[in-house]
Amino acid sequence: METRDDGLLGVLWALVIIQGAITVLSAIEALVVAVATGSILISWPIVAITTGGAVLALAAARGLRRRARWAQRVTVIAEVIVLGSGLLNLGLSLLLANAFLDLVPTLTTIVAPVAALVLIRRVAQLFADQEAGADVPEMSVA
Amino acid sequence: MMGREILADGSSDSVLEGFEPGDQVGNPLYGILAEHELAFVIVLALPVLAWLGVRLLRRAAASGKPRATELLDGYDRLQSPRRLAVWLLVVSAWVHVGLVFGHELSAYTLAYALGAVLLAIAARWLTLGRRPRLVATILVASVAAFWFLGAPPDQIGIATKLAEIFALTLLVVSEPGVRRRFATAGVVSLVVVTGLAAWIGAFASAGAEGGHHGGEFPEPATVVPFVERLQATPGEEETAAALFEATTAAVMKYQDPAVAEAAGYQVGTVMGSEHHAQNPAYIGDGRILDPEHPESLIYADTAAGPILIGVLFETDDIGHAGPAVAGPIMVWHSHENVCFSLTPPLLAGILSPFGVCPAGSINVPTTGEMLHAWMIPGIEEPWGHLDEADLNDYLARVEISAASR
Image (tube, rainbow over all chains, first blue to last red; front, side):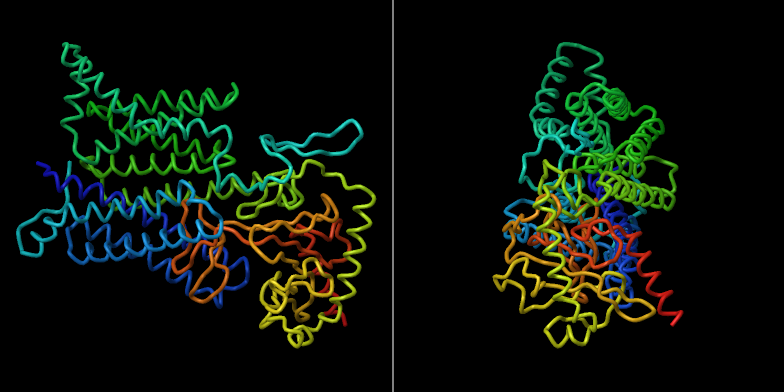
């Protein structure tokens, strides 16, 4: 039987998977730009960091499903970084272009990380139970 | 939305609708198409309409209407992921309704209407716990339709597809018997293919010359003023030719990168086919479009060594238009949504359709205006956009010539 927290964990998992997938696309784009501009030798850190971010996000999603505490911490750090970059970009947009962020960046870099952080807070008890050694099954909302 | 009209006198005129001369035109990838504005507005009204709808449904259920009772009971039984998926389907269906009324009647409007009906039916099925696989199929079909019919993609289209993929993911997470590993791979594939389709659609929507001469959508991340008149006057042609001649004569000495370095240009190691070397002393110096002091030189790395292929003029400040001295021949452009890396400091790309830059880079929302002049023999027009095929042909000729010496 699903608990309320269990259901919210499902929503969190789906959100983190989508964010990981977007980062995979971003890594591909960074690689294409590096190759196309012939700057792979100096821009490889960007490709490497973005690829690492994508792998970490997808691994964290897997960890969340198992209610691993490390996955919760990684997700919190990643969401704070995404939100920070979103707010920085919002500030730059207001300052340089006198405009708010477009619809999609607002959703992916402001709304999504805020939602993920709220969800993590709401399902924190699940991770606490896991750490306390309670017999918690892998996420199964069905 | 766009097209080219040949006038009675044989001149070609522009033809983006809904713009005034001087308006800044960017690629729809970072904006909302005029036909999609209604969809955006009615989505903003959705919370109020949803609240009203739920109230009416509750009233109908209270008065004994079985269908209303069935829907409310079904919704109450749903788990959190499915409840959210239902609402995402409602949002997507509602966007499609807005698209129907935003477009003139065509095959597209019929497709949008079909999409709205199918997504609404899917939301009902999901609420009642029926046919989850068919609901998933409808969602995948709606996303796939965007790959083939979504050009030019805009913020409404991309946001709607993200909502549909999110709904599909929520459906998968709550569906028994679905292996999570396959589900993850499927979702990642859908997102990546949708992003790539958006890129292809965005570049395909740009004019043949990258939109640098106005009158067409520019390539993603490029912004050009709307140009109503594409034909230059003889006077404008003379001005453009004289400026190009003066510029070429002034920068010939920089064919040797060492001379450019000595003059303050940051050439460094020339890499790639369009290596820009900026002179910081000329940035914001009050001299705009000065042939003696172009802000950047452009080199190409070849087997025969670096060669000077052009210059870049820049305005001093963001928001200040470059001097329009030669009408549609010399159209200044700016950039938007450029991703600039801090690790190391360099251009990392342009903002993804999903609104993110690569990790470690920030989004520079806009730049000052700029204008290229290309010193490549044989090209049709030295100002503005350079056709990549022309550049590659020239570089190949240079390398063959160097090898035969």
